[in-house]
Amino acid sequence: MKKDIHPKYHQIEVVCGSCGAVWKTGSTLTELRVSICGNCHPFYTGSQRLIVDTEGQVDRFMKKLAAAQERQADAARRKEQKQQQPKKKSLLREIYGEEGEGESGEA
Image 1 (tube, rainbow, N blue to C red):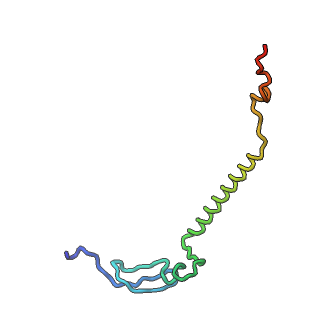
Image 2 (tube, rainbow, N blue to C red):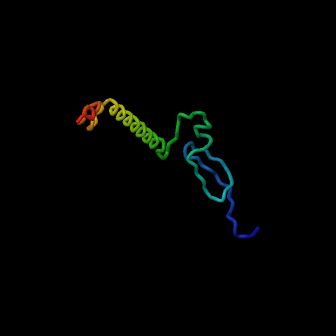
Image 3 (cartoon, rainbow, N blue to C red):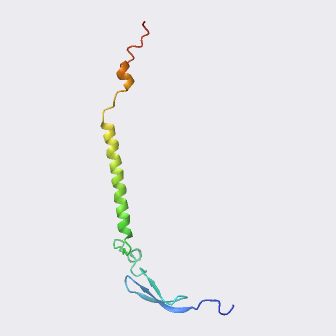
């Protein structure tokens, strides 16, 4: 192993920002902080309804979901309104009649 090319390896304490848990590990970093750990993560604790949302990701997702559902409902409403409107007669049928009344070939 070559000397002076490898980073220093330290015994450090990792600190959780949510619950404050601390544990020791080895790393090339001098300090390590995590936003959520196995002690407070909803998947591991079984309280999956409690979501720690530090960056607003859940709120952004819920807004996008609501907007998408609103667009779908609006499209369905427009489609329904379009189907309810009476069909317009063809301009040619208005001029020449329903069954081609003037096309009997008589001169």
